[in-house]
Length: 286
Image 1 (cartoon, one colour):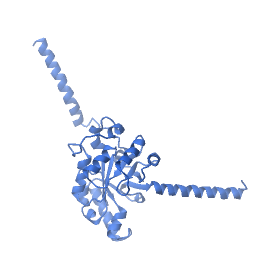
Image 2 (cartoon, one colour):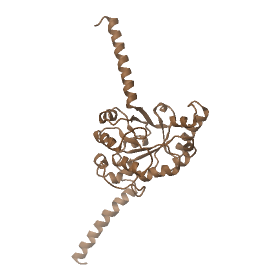
Image 3 (spheres, one colour):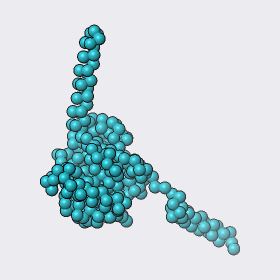
Image 4 (cartoon, one colour):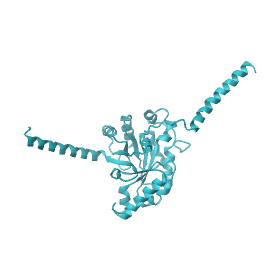
């Protein structure tokens, strides 16, 4: 064998090793995908997560909420006039905050989902899910190929989550489907079974609104139990309102809004101030 042949053979072996070893490493499970969605990580560890709800377009309020201790922020775009430009600015203003941005989109359309993930949301909350197709669409439009058909375009996602976003997004972006009607409850077993769905959320208020039943009504409770049972059977995370945090198996919880927190905070402060004033009078302090 000539020196040239020896060189070419060695080079070929080196290239082969570079291609084969990473693949073998990944196949053996020793290569770990980078996880920056702390909500997903906490849920994997069996921890409850709570999200504060945002209706305003004020970045200062968003940042205050994002730094307040919530695991995520539920950015409300179904029942608010918020636009994607507003939300993009809020997410960017506190891109290093610990609370992960989740967006409740108006519909599971390609346009809504594409915009939501492009501006940096790591959670897509899909309202009014009645059919398997709606759940499948949510996964399809939020995930890059080969899982979905999300296109790769401009956005602030990689500036927030890193240069390897394209390679890691499918693992980090979560899909939450909301069951809000008797039709959705009837299909919940099939909806929960859709690959790529992470959380099935029992929408307590709308299930009552659509049925006209009080939350203490046995018929209402039966619907909630079905959502509970079928979600767990499918191996998915069960979601609900924060008021259900003490109920078994509810792990993904929607917390209060900024207006509710301001009202509560004002009440606490004013009550505390009044109590302090009365104590000063009683002790003779002025």
